[in-house]
Image (cartoon, rainbow, N blue to C red; front, side, top):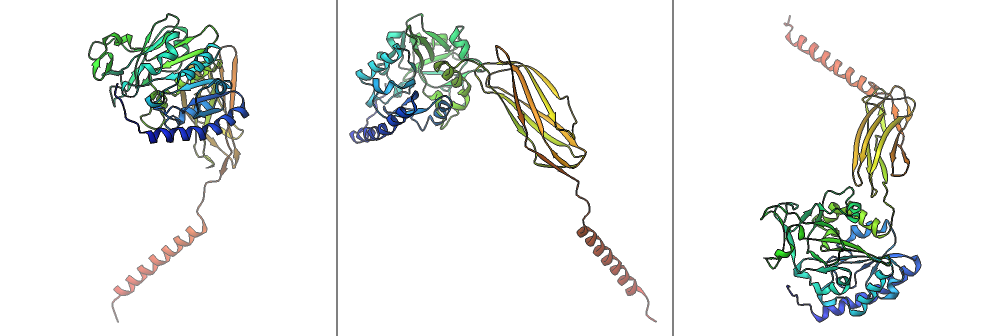
Length: 416
C-alpha cells in the first residue's frame, strides 16, 4: 500500500474542524429526528464536497447530517442510514467507533460503506467492521481493458449483475455501474454479490491489481466490487469497493450511477419499490392564428421500479387542434431511470388563450396510477399585417423612384 505522510499540523486542523462541525451537526440531528449520517470526520477520500450531488440525492429521502465527530452510540441513535466513505489512514475508525457501528447494524441499522483503490486504502481499515458478517476487503485496484468508460481502464463499467433478490432489485433501470476502486472477498453464503467483473478472454477480462501486480484470485467473475448482506436483527450492509461511484465533482460517476444510487438508497431506507412518473412540458408563451405550435413532452420514471402499460394522452383545450399525430400513445414499458420524449403540433384558428394537458396512466405493480400536467397558457394573436410605417416607407420609395425617373427624362431632353 502506498503510504502518505500527513503533517501533525494538518491533523490538528482536521480535528479542530471536527469539533466545530460536530456542534452544528448534533443540533441538527436532535431537531429533525431520524437522519442520514455522512461520515466526514475521518478525512474521507470523497468528502462532502466531492459527494455533493449524492448528498443532495439523499436529502430527497431525509435530513442529511454531515458528521465531523467520532462515531458513537449517541450519534447513531438518530440514524436511519450511516454512510462511510473511505477514510484517511491517519484517522481511521477507532475500536470504540467500530464497536458502535457493529452494534448499530446488529440492532437494525443500515450501513453503506465504501473503500477505494490500494493507494489510499488498506483492508485493515474495514475488516474489523465487516469481516464478521462475511465481507473481507482486498488491497487492490480493478481494471478492465474492454469494459470501461473510454477514459481510463480503471474506470470500469460493471454489468455482470448476479441473479439474487438484492441484485435484481438494485439493477432495475440500470445498464451498468461505473466504479473505480478495489474488490472484496466473500466468506459467508449469506452475502449477496450484486455485480462482478466479466470473464472475457485475457487481456480483456476484469482484473484486480496491487501496485501493478495481478491478483489472480480476484480476476474475472471473482472480482466483486459490490455486495450486500442482511443481518438477523434486520440490519443491512451494502459494501462497495469504490467510493468514486458517488463522486460528484468530476469524471461523471454520480451522473452515470444516479439510478443505481436511487435504488440503493430506497433499499437501505426500506422505501417500497415503485415507479414515480413525472411529466415535463415545453410550450411557447405566444403564437399566431393558424400557425404551427410545437409542444414537447418528456415522461420520466424517477422511481425505483418499472412502469408498465403506459398510456400518454395529450388534450388541447377547446380551440386548439392537434395536427400531426394521434392524441394517445401506448408504451409497453418505461424502465426506472428512463424517459420518453414526444413532440406534438397544435394549431389555433382564433385569437385567445389556450392550454395543453398531458395525462399519463400506468401500472405501478399493484394498481393503475394517473399523473396529469397542465401547461401554462399560450397567448394566440392575429398574424401581424402591413403596418402604416410600412405603407409610408413604400410611398417614399415610390416617390423617390418617380423623381429619379423624371430627373433622368429632363436631363435627356434636348435644349431648344
